[in-house]
Image (cartoon, rainbow over all chains, first blue to last red; front, side, top):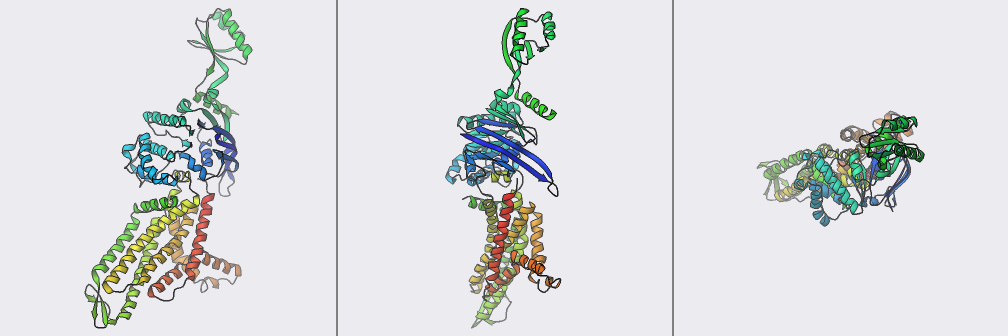
Length: 311
Length: 276
């Protein structure tokens, strides 16, 4: 079953005196997220990532389209019993301590009082702020607020967890701890939906990724699919390339880049790959490996956004 | 359970603010003053009420002194009404706009609670705080007058609920203004403007605004506004009549209840349509 589906979801904000100015925050946005995945939505600022999550949580009303969580069509108050959410720049009531804040949001989630007694210390321990349980939230640093926010998102033992920039303001050790928490949630069969700017982190833990820009879905797939480039090959060689090879390759209009450990080739099709191999063999170059070149998620993301902007 | 949690945490939120402590402080000073000063001296069939040993009434039959004490209680209830309006509105006007802040509303609305339930829970919390203040003051007065003078006016306890109802009606107006404007200043201004100007003008519209035009639509709008908004002056008069033991008029209570319900439903409708 899909944990999250959206079908042609659109949201247009109307601003200005006569509400004539339109901002298309989301346009025909359709994706499906399998249960038990860590799925990340990537995009530049203002791309529509938060709007998408807010529609799923009924904080924002869609202009068109529909969506569902765990098979239940939205909007639905009841589905939120199985959903957790860590908003970006969240603000807890400052007059509460961490324990009181978790108790409030636990009660609002319908968690029994007796269960909260054991659950709250457990969650605070899990996110690493158990010694601050009795301290007023107003004294918390940004990183501690993020950890408390994560604990709050897990208070009802949700099946689907939405996290909007969960590691924002958290130090590297804390980020690693949060990553471990998310991987542990995945192991428990829970679905984690992540909005993050930290692409290197997303790459480490995500199963699926979608890239969004100006409200439009640009690409969706696994991290492997998004970071593998069809046209680029990395060829490892055991001997140095003779000058004659370079001249002949250039005459054949092959786009090659020479590195210390091999050649990176941008090829149009398999014929060009075979011609390149033939050429290497002809010049008695020892071929150690041939693999499709993988870029980082960040490189793929930037290339895609650049291409979209150029269009 | 969710509504109860909201009420309880709204009480905690308001307890963290100084405004209501001022009202409670003033109440406490008056209570201590009455506790230490008020007493009665019985001579034969007549009684004299005294403050710090000084007679404040001529010797009167018990029935007449009871009337006088009830007048004193009406005065105290009127004073409390002013206190509730000033401090209660100022203290509670911000509780709805504050939950609508970005980052806060996300936390609330991501929980399995309907938007109208959130409004109801927070509103009931605000009303509960004011109820506790009224109960503290009038309950203490009832005990002091009962123990020291021997007059147990049950109508004073009934007034606790009536004054709370009166505040609840006013709060529904504050709620609507808060939801529409997302500001805490506008509801305070609106509530005071209504109490001091608009409410009084509408109540006496037949002697004032009616004279401007005889147009049926114009007069209909004035009447509509009068019945749409809570009739606080009429409610206050009913509370005074009730404390005095006079005939009690239910009409302003029913009209104000309908008006408050309309204002609450309007607030819930506006709130449910908002994007956050």
